[in-house]
Image (tube, helix red, strand yellow):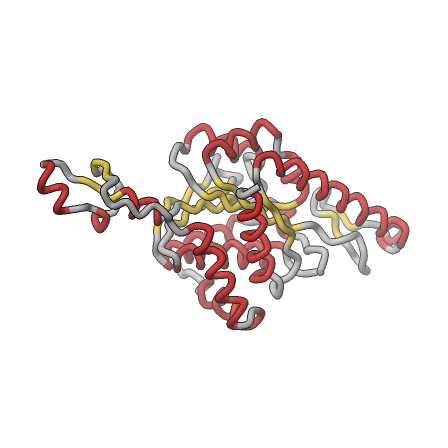
Length: 293
């Protein structure tokens, strides 16, 4: 299977649109929030299948007669689950006129790339038409990131069999390991997530959300991805309707942000490739502040 070199494109995007200082800030901000703080190497537990053998404390294991793991090492390595939205709506454009699919791939890939650099494990989950859910296991290899992005790009436009709310409910019901959920979605899906679902995922997982907001119904031949038809010029070229459409989207997003606050979940919008590094820094800083309030 031929896999496109997404990591090369991500590195190039960071180099092109982020100064060396900005890239270092993004890397440093991620590390400062998610680096393990517990340095008590006497805090041990028994080895279980799936643990990294590099974390075994061989001296303590020899003394106790059981294979023991240094908990502090485990806590330094985080599990990042990319929760990715799919469907024909993801083939639309953002408010800046750029491809939502392209922004989704580059944003998820950029966050995953910095997680990989930090030594963290990255997996992904999304819904697809022919399967209930596609789940990529947690791994710390660049090939794994390439594989996630390649398969997501292939499946991105297919109608999902489950909504974002259903995927998050599945995560809260079946995944007991603490994770950092990086959700990449659009405004309609974010609005549809229920409070009970947000409460359940916030009890176990840290959650960050990037929201891609659809472009306005302007231009010569705007197309409605939800209903599969072109928008008549009577509507697409009406400035009052453009303003109303923009106002409604802004109100919906503001309501979503307010809904997330009690659960200490932060979100930002991203509309262009250029702003991906800066907006991810904003997201991480908002997340930091939400957890110290």
